[in-house]
Length: 442
Image 1 (cartoon, rainbow, N blue to C red):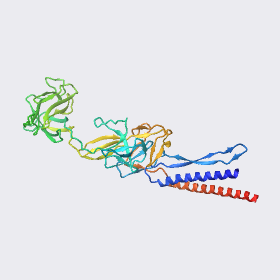
Image 2: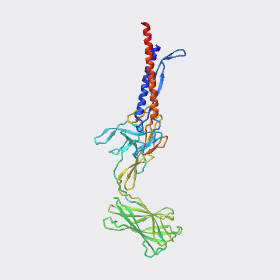
Image 3: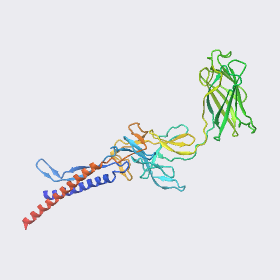
Image 4: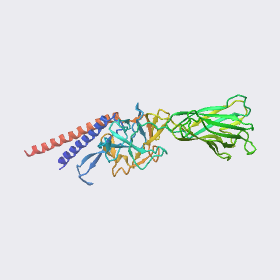
């Protein structure tokens, strides 16, 4: 039985080394495959019969040893949408399985995971890697900027224009001279946006009254009109007092101590440290557009002040209106936020890319295209933002290369070849021994 046992053992050795050679060949073939995870080989001895006084030849089997948790080299890419994971985690991806009646892509409900981050945008606005897998992420509420972490879905970029936003608030900072020169204009022209995104000119004219520290301000625009459509350049008026005043002797000198609104305007009441605002109702042909002018804080030296000098100076003006903007592209941040950019200078977060981790990533089931699916051995997937709860970080504009090393694979190839030859020699020797036994009978 020992000779036949030796034959069987040697045959199992040939099979095991063939399996090892197959793993090595796969690793070598994928040495340049983005995100590929190598497969090593473990050999396991199976006994037939073994005691302290007797041992019968057994066999050997080759078992794959997956290297899913071994980091590949991160290399810079010319693709600005490419992403590499530094550390643990996988991209969640979906595979397309057709289109619906509306021509929209439909997806396989089975969840896939990959480290292949060479994503580009296809003609439908989806981010797809070279294996044809669709990147999934969390949608972001455009109003709050908060990601919905309860649902993963393929990320599709809407390339519609950025809708205009009418100006509703404006911050105004200037110094009115304590001793203005006669005949010197005290006015500012600033730009705001109406509901259609058209830029409109707003003029603030200041005139000192006979009362020290008191100024009249008139807010106007050449395109302002009444509800009936008639031209009405003047939008609203007000009187601004600077402390200390008889009505407010506690206000610090040079700071706003009160605003009395005139026609077409409303004003905030004095409270130390609270915003000193004047709200006027403009109409540029699109209905009433309230614009709140923030002159700083009551009793504080910010915004509009009245200090020494003879000339008026506008220090700063900012407003929250936005013109319409055309889509120019997307960018990805290291936080995983995918941001749509527009030619009006605005940007909008539309999705966030999470990373998915497993308790035992080496037990994931390999699929086509450097993808994996979860198994009972891998544990349940856990998705979180990059650099959170054990997830790795994102390196934007880079890809993770294959984690196989050619030199190591060639060394293992030589070992497998020699081991295969040795097992073949065992079979030849066992065959010769059997032939000798047969010849003895003859």
